[in-house]
Amino acid sequence: MSGLFGTDSARGVTVAELSCEQAMQAGRAAAELLAKEQGGRIIVAKDKRLSSDVLEAAVCAGICSSGIDAETLGAVPAAAASFIVREHKASAGIMITGAAGSGDGSGIRLFAADGFRLDERVQSELEDNIMARMNASPQRKFDNIGRMLSCDNAADEYVAHIKQLIGADLSGMKIALICGEPSTGATAERLFRELGADVTLLPQQEPEEDGLAPAVTDMERLMDTAAGGDFCCGLAIGDNGGSCLAVDENGMAVDGDHLLAIFAKYFKENGLLKDDTFVVNQMSGLGLFNFARDNGIKAVTSGASGRSALDRMLESGYSLGGDRNGHVFFTDDSPCEDGQLCGARLLEIMKKTGKPLSQLAEEMQRLPSISLNVRIADSCREIWKNDKDITDLIEWYQGEFGDTGRVTVRESTAAAPFITITIEGSDFGRINFIAGEIADRIKQRCGARE
Image 1 (tube, one colour):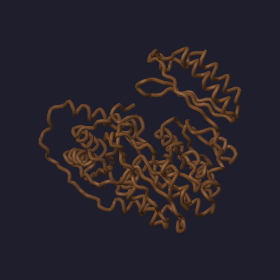
Image 2 (tube, helix red, strand yellow; image 1 turned 45 degrees about the vertical axis):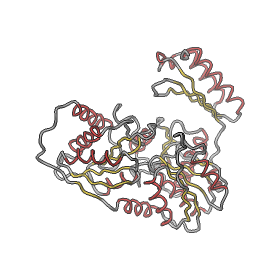
Image 3 (cartoon, rainbow, N blue to C red; image 1 turned 120 degrees about the vertical axis):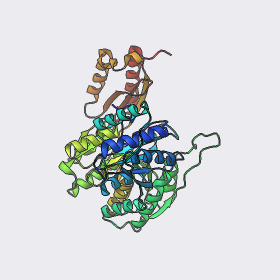
Image 4 (cartoon, helix red, strand yellow; image 1 turned 135 degrees about the vertical axis):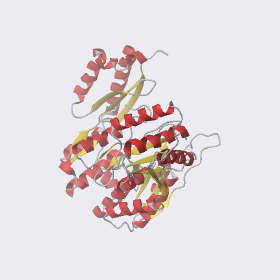
């Protein structure tokens, strides 16, 4: 597992406080390990964070100092960068973007020549190379310097690519759109307009004077907007363009599980779902698994991260997968999770079927659920899994449910250890009681002292 690049490069490899020196060494290491052949080229893209310009310069300096050309794309979504890496036959790609969970911190994300994330072994080798360089003596004079190249039409190429994949004119469809980053908003609004949709782009909210996030979330704003006008739906594109969540014409939320159900059924009916199988996150709701069973679709379960879903898809050649948070992978068409492609595909299905989003979404029925977090002692990490007092209780309640409910208990990987208990079932009162019983048992056996 990489300590520098994180565990989930399907959503971005991140360093909370990335220095210019680290960025330069990352560019240098990527050039030497991923673009060894003469004439290799590395794509460099960024988001619109204030720190991105200086980090872009540092990354490009590292690449060029190793005799490799750096081609800059400017501010584009991550999905656009991964597409351009493959389209331009580059040796690799580097995306400078926000670090997950770090506020305004920046990080880097690495793409292989095919646009997909790097293999963990290669990623680990890169990390070792960077760390060794950080502690090494100053570099010798360079006798082979690469060039700085510029691609001014990356956004044009990306939008044209998505339009080519969508086989429907979206004229007559009025959508509300909200985007988490300006670079995503620019391409998303243009994409949906050029596909024929009438687009209302909601402005980004400014932080409160005290630096706190606005009281109303983007999804709440989108829900209010969609419900208050004659919109066919609303789309929320986030995670530097990597995720898409929706709201229907009545302002009701449509999460990633619903989107996967809509795509899987439509693709199966049109012979587009390989082996009638899709890959779902282990945290996906039981309703999605029930939907798959009832519609003759096989749901293959991956780990809890988006990275593990993509790994499983590539390993078996599946073409559809994702998670509840709206990270949807169409690996036949994009090497990266792509919120704009996801939103366009959803609108295409609505247009071709003539069904409103509320009708498409209601085919997957979500079961009531409840989640509780229990802080555990650091010494009990992983140990609780072998405690029969805990495991027997979990097995007892899962046996009580049978196929009508589900008990999921998993440990977090956070610095402060805790266990998340998620219970799904038709009777909310009953699942609430069960969640409390399991939480109390875990507290008794391995709870952290206050």
